[in-house]
Length: 360
View 1 (cartoon, rainbow, N blue to C red):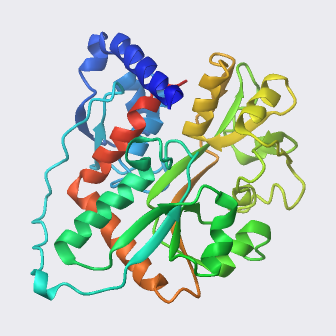
View 2: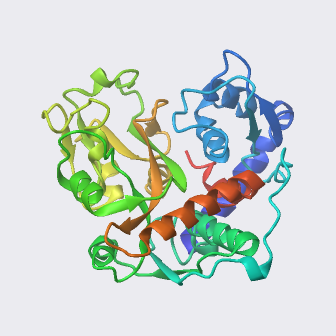
View 3: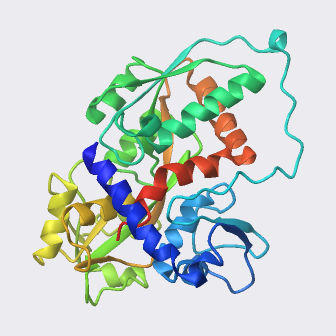
């Protein structure tokens, strides 16, 4: 907890220094309509004088941007939050809000139990405000949906052993688990973890999308402009983390032994191996990676590459044999969609991620 608070304080101090720039203050804290020829990198460069802050814009606008940050459309209006944590008010809805149904007409439904675990900053942890970003998104969405339309009562519990979640869900000890990644279940010849998840579980729509980035030593020749640059390299991702994205979209890096993958126990050890020159890059979600760099005081020695390796969704999973699974996923999808439409979704993302936007 003290580590989290110290990051927030450091982020706030750094943001004050940045906010003194007149050019910065002219653009952040407003909305912006995307124009032809724009990219998130270019917009971030104009807004924050740092194109690599494009991830701030992507994370803050998941309700209007798709899953591919390289594809944006002219006319789309995006929010440009100030990275000192100042939040924009939720945008006004263009359409009339749905009318809540009368209490007597609300559908009675069984209570459902969702389970998550901690030590997954900033997404889920009991020590984080409101249980972390994904926990807060789901809790707020359920409350809003139930108030307006009724539906099942969903409780969230904590079982701080990630390895136990999927086997217990298969045994229907609870109705769903979150937040978990979804492999490309439509891909042929699934193996390992991807085959296990796709074979046993149903998935909600993404509750949040996470950018998986490549971190390299400063001055590295590896730029990752194309996939071919990775062939023959040694990457690092900790043991227990998913690896299906190494073989998706026709890459087959691991399946064809084109890439070596180091699997130490911790995220920190991956970055220590990078610092010692034992691996070429660390493949990690953006925020966890930046958090580790900050903790290990590797700022300036390690940089994140511009192009994401993948964009993966965080989902609610339910066992294919759970009798309430379909009802749960329907409720999750409609509740999160309603939260996005109201503008509350983007405000919650800014609330939880703003302390991390200054980590480099």
